[in-house]
Amino acid sequence: MGAETSGALQPSCRKTAAHALTIVRDGVITGEGPTTKGRIHFSRALDADDAAWCARILTVSAVEHQPVSRAELEALFEISDAAAERTDDGRFDDLLAKAVAHHAASESGLPVPPRTVALSPDTDIESWAPTKAANIDTKVLEWIASQMRGKRHSNHRLAALVATLVGAAALPLAQLPGMLDMGML
Image (cartoon, rainbow, N blue to C red; front, top):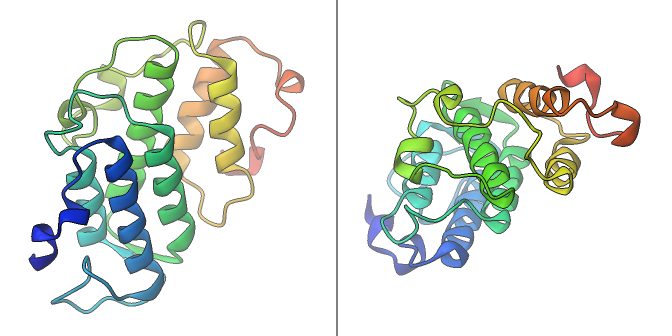
């Protein structure tokens, strides 16, 4: 892809990775831009190439051993929101759920594997993600839930992960008002 040579799509840190993800988002929204060159891409559509762009950006060597940042997650949530149609066979939703788990675990002081392992479609999230939320920062869970609330496209894998973490932490849902739209589960 010609866009791979673009400096904006070759992140050097988490901040530039988040910016590169916004370029993917813009391509999803408009169907135009460096991530859509050389192929037919409809506006508001997310395809396998878009998901692959996100995976490449999130796993470049410059950020491989750093936890997924909040800015990167915000960009991923924006991509998810922008896509009215999906033809990526669930790859983006898998990537988003794994990125959320990576961020939540690292923000809570838990060890996380390198991104190339954690975000790989060949790695089961259950093999490394926290299964108990006793050590997960409640504020991180609240932020994640706020990103999920009222979204057009529900990510069932992500909703199940958050519900599992909240349940594992034995937090009454009343303690986290409106955290989850139970219709998402």
